[in-house]
Image (tube, rainbow, N blue to C red; front, side, top):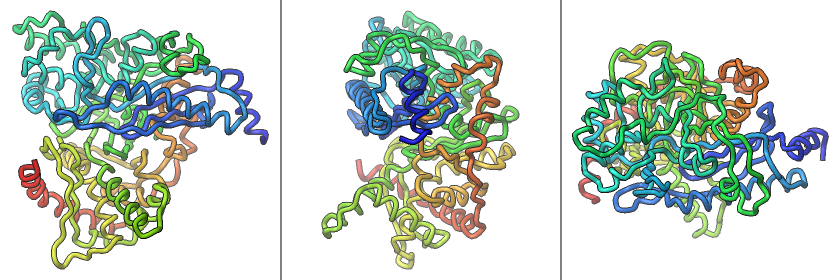
Amino acid sequence: MNQQQGSAAELIRSGGAILGIEFGSTRIKASLIGPDTTPLASGSHAWENQLKDGVWTYDMEDVWKGLADCYASLVQDVRARYSLELQTVAAMGFSGMMHGYVALDAEGKLLVPFRTWRNNITGKACAELTPLLDFAVPQRWSVAHLYQSILEAQPHVPRIAHLTTLAGYVHWKLTGEHRMGVGEASGVFPIDPVSGDWDAARMAKFDALIAPRKLGWKLRDILPAVLPAGRPAGKLTAAGAKLLDPSGKLPAGIPLCPPEGDAGTGMVATNAVRPRSGNVSAGTSVFAMIVLEKSLARVHEEIDIVVTPDGKPVAMAHSNNGSSDLDAWIALFGQVGKALGAEARPDDLYGKLLPLAVLGDPDAGGLLSINYVSGEHMTGFTEGRPLFARSQDSKFTLENFVRAMYYASLCAMRTGMNILTEQEGVIIEEIRGHGGFFKGGDTGQRMMAAALDVPVSIPATAGEGGAWGMAVLAAYMLRADAKQSLPDYLDERIAKSIGKPVKPDPRDVKGFTEFFARHKKGLAIEREAVKALS
């Protein structure tokens, strides 16, 4: 063990390390860091959502099994790296996929299956709430799911005692505290940027809207308390420690920071929390977030207004569909290799195939891919049917195919970004990338730079993911200077780790523009596919 490992081992042994865990779409990941945010160890657990009775969901049993397995994986990594047992940590925090619907009764029991961000089943609710609140309410948002349930007179609604998100639910089960970070809260119901709390005026409008139904509760009664980054949000209970570590070694009493969403952890991980900074998180979903200098001129249904973990307004262009279709094709190529006697590990498949996109034609050779595994709010789809099409004279090569898959995953987000840059005059000087899209070389950076026509940089810790960003928020809670702002804290610890930006190649920018135009025309095919393939 070298000196650096010895110092890390002593930090872990003394209980000074900090833990972040994020529930992502395909993985639950743990990141153990030092107080200076240096990654020390990690763990993970693979899981997947299911479409049950027309609703995208995860079974809550899988939440707890996955969490325990993820933590056990982290313990094993610590053991392998440092030859010691992880006994405790100085602080921890939990994050998850934003939005969705976790409705609980007075005893804390789930009233209906967890409805994830992926569901586009709240169109009628959004159509009423957006003009009522004078605020774009996306179909993913928790309040949209709540009001849709009210409109449909779903029998569980009068019994709701607590409404939260996946991250909020996990935090509550581990601490007994019904609390939520302000960034995560901004995907539940609008936040007042002045107070940093639920928007009281809009909440009053919602309560007046539902009052004739006599449900027995008001919105504030069932929503969590809102906290900014840096504030303590409870301590791990004995029962919570057992959920996280069924072996019983982890003690109670560890402080937790406010639970956040994956948007917030992405902003933190890329040090993009100041006005005019921006980041794009690209994985199963793809969303770009630009911290605003001023409010937008008008409401745009395609643009979410959320906030940073310290409460600053952010414009988000969110696409439900990111890498899922590409992942499915990579898996198919793996099956082809296996059938030919050349079986390859998934990491090798991605490492060999994805860089081929750089060798493709700038416009992907005339190929068309539409990657809608689920509905896409940005373009008006409540359901999706992944499809691939080409004309007789398209250049059907593997390189062009992979580039088309990359491009397709960015088109819905580009629709929203066009609104910000062309209609609202938002200035974007650089985008910082985060998520699996950017793993392995600069291919992801080049494709993103082509799609957005701005330089794209990657933090050195981008591969650590949102779990690392969550651990950083937990570390921020323990900062020595209680008055230090989150932007200053991140500048001090992360700024030097941001890599040099990849500038957009004009040929790639022109090629993406051509693909984007083809993609928009192809949505007519997608609409027919949804009808035909029921």
